[in-house]
Amino acid sequence: MNKLASFSNDADRSQLAADLLKQMGLDGKTLQAGDLTVRSPVDGLPLGKVKTSSAAAVDSAIAQSVQAYERWKTVPAPRRGELIRVFGNKLREHKETLGALVTVECGKIYQEGLGEVQEMIDICDFAVGLSRQLYGLTIASERPGHRMAETWHPIGPVGVISAFNFPVAVWCWNTALAIVCGNSVIWKPSHKTPITALACQHMFAAAMAELGDAPVGLSQLIIGAVETGTQLVADKRMALISATGSTAMGRKVGPVVAARFGRSLLELGGNNAIIVCPSADLDMAVRAILFGAVGTAGQRCTSTRRLFVHEDIYDALVGALKQAYAKIRVGNPMDAQTLVGPLIDADAYESMQQTLSAVEGKVIGGERVLEDVYSQAFYVNPALVEMPAADHTVQEETFAPILYVYAFKSLEEAIRQHNDVPQGLSSAIFSNDIREAELFLSAAGSDCGIANVNIGTSGAEIGGAFGGEKETGGGRESGSDAWKAYMRRATSTINYSKELPLSQGIEFNL
Ligand code: NAD
Image 1 (tube, rainbow, N blue to C red):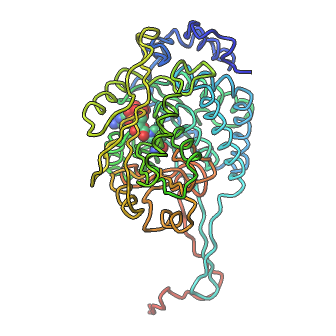
Image 2 (image 1 turned 90 degrees about the vertical axis):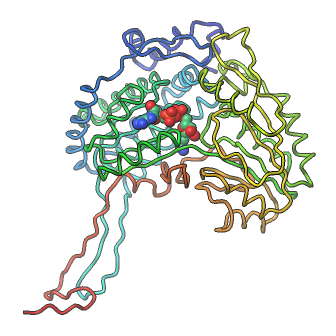
Image 3 (image 1 turned 60 degrees about the vertical axis):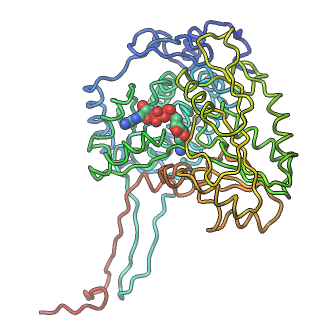
């Protein structure tokens, strides 16, 4: 049953948040004792106050993280995986409750809240399997009686900085891998979504207690705005900073970590596009575009922001899309009928309106709705903008449901425009022509980290590596071999002969 069904849409959401926390084992008073007011985007009203971390508290969290790492790195990896297995089971137990809390705190519809928790469960399963792998290579040596091998070792304390729009899954992608790889973790969530973070941290602590032998401080939470993140990023003791958020944030974080020779993993903004060719299944394309462009109220890094439609099918596809837009139900994300919930806050709304007022094309939608019901929350009709033919496409990511539509004549031209942006996260082509699809996936095609065929830009599975090129930051998280970012590599040459030949045949004799 829908966890939210038992609460009226007009219920006191602060009470709801406290009740959900209680169901996950946290004291409801957690929300009464702090200096940071957290608001629900559903109605714009306070959910409660949580305690932020002082600079001294961040410093001691880092010291404890170093100590925890020193112990954890020697625990056999399959035992480390056992902790993630226990944690994954806790997530299964509380999937509906945590999913509901995600909806209340960040405003995505309940189906997407559940999906976010499922992603956490999936990455835990992946990490448990990984904990019995973490393979290195054996390499042929050029010298007789020698063997070369690679070993992967834990890297050190990992700082995870996350954005408001995936308040829990991004942390879990990082943490599940970092922990099985033998590291400790400190998490700084967005100051807009610290309550779901408190819930996750509590569940992780319960999993550690159940395991029994995980060191204190293995996973910690620090709460605060930019300054808290800046302190974590600048600290030499943090071996890896995995930061998810805007390109503006990454532009600051990257150089600071590089200057102290730390390692960073950046997951930044996108400007994702779909190309629709004449052979495409238009019904499938419309459904995928709709989910990509308006799902999560356009607040996904992989949201579809640009659409390139071949001129022969432009009227048919864009006509169908307009009809679909007219049917979208915008409203309270706790209501099962709603497809599009609120924007996160007033700033997001202002930024959307500014973008729309400056746009060159013909705008349909984009206006604020439900102001009479929720005067302090920001609901909008998703906007569709028909753009004039242009050499350059929209270069900026506006984190709101705006879809720019362009007509194209040739696929080569569409691909050029597709790639002509600073970001490089997710991309898709709808085509039933194998030549077009393969061209799009080839080196001459999409320049993004994710390139799909007959699937939209958002909604990645955890099995693949997730991330993008150019100003998206170049990092990869989640599946495939993304785990290597959380480890350091040692190359070893072992001599089991009685000679000491030098490589490259160098003679060096006395
Ligand atoms: P944001 O950049 O405002 O904040 C993200 C996080 O970075 C927050 O925790 C924030 O406190 C912290 N932060 C900001 N400046 C910092 C600094 N100088 N030093 C250290 N920490 C700092 O982003 P947001 O508004 O929360 O999220 C939306 C953005 O995130 C969009 O651009 C979206 O595309 C991007 N995003 C990217 C991915 C991805 O995987 N590529 C996933 C989700 C969101």
